[in-house]
Structures are given as structure tokens and as C-alpha cells.
Amino acid sequence: MKKLFLPAGIALLLCSFNLADSPLKGNWEYRGGKINGKLDAAPTAYKLQRIYDDEHYNAKVMEEGEETVVYEKGDYQLKEDTCFETQTYCMQESKLLNKTIKYNYTISNDTLKLLSVLPNGNKVEDYWVKVK
Image 1 (tube, rainbow, N blue to C red):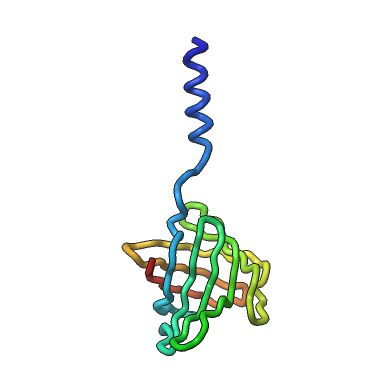
Image 2 (image 1 turned 90 degrees about the horizontal axis):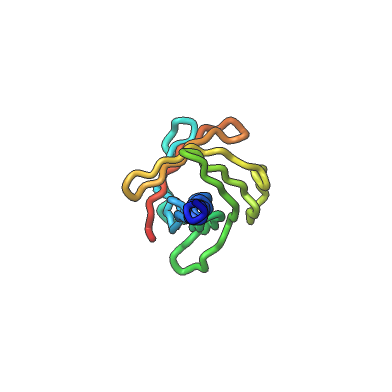
């Protein structure tokens, strides 16, 4: 009987850890969206990218002939179909700094869709395509 408890205990311990990578992990490029139902086209003069690891993100702007600039950083947590993002750095004044925003997210093929109602009441729907 003792021999059964040790393997069962080890299996239970291993099952308590989440070893899977975050589905957001990687580089994502902004492809447009909607703000309060109005189309918001992706910029053509520069690119916006977000790089996610398992717990954090960096947002950067890339313009040809210019240095890449990190304009935002933050932490995030995923729970089912919800992403909780907390902005921890912004290069401009931000009312979202250190506030957690709740996004519903879906990933279909290589496209990430983020939906939220921001604290100012704006409804946002952003589309990001995985580039790495």
C-alpha cells in the first residue's frame, strides 16, 4: 500500500503545476480594430507590436529608418477566455498606469482578438496577428 502512495503523491504534485506556455507568448502586430463601433485602421507609416512572454508584455512602435521604441510595458494573467492586463510603464502620461483592464480574448489561426470596455467607457476591439 505504501508503494502506491508515493507515485500517486508525485503525480498529484506534478499535476498542480501549469507547465504550458501562455497562448499569447510571441510577437503580435496590430492590424486594426474598432473603437465604439468605428473602424480604427492599422497605421501605415509605422508598425505597432506587442511581445508577450508567460507573464509580461512590451509594446513597441517600429518606423523605418528610426530606432524601435518601447512605449508600454505591463503584466498579464489569463483565466479561461479573459486576459487581465496591468500597465506598469508608459512613455506618455496614462490614466491606465497600474490599473488592471479586463479583456475577453480569442485566438483563431494566427489572429488575436481583444475586446474590452475601458475605464473611460470606450468599447475597444483590437486585432493582432502573430508574426513570431
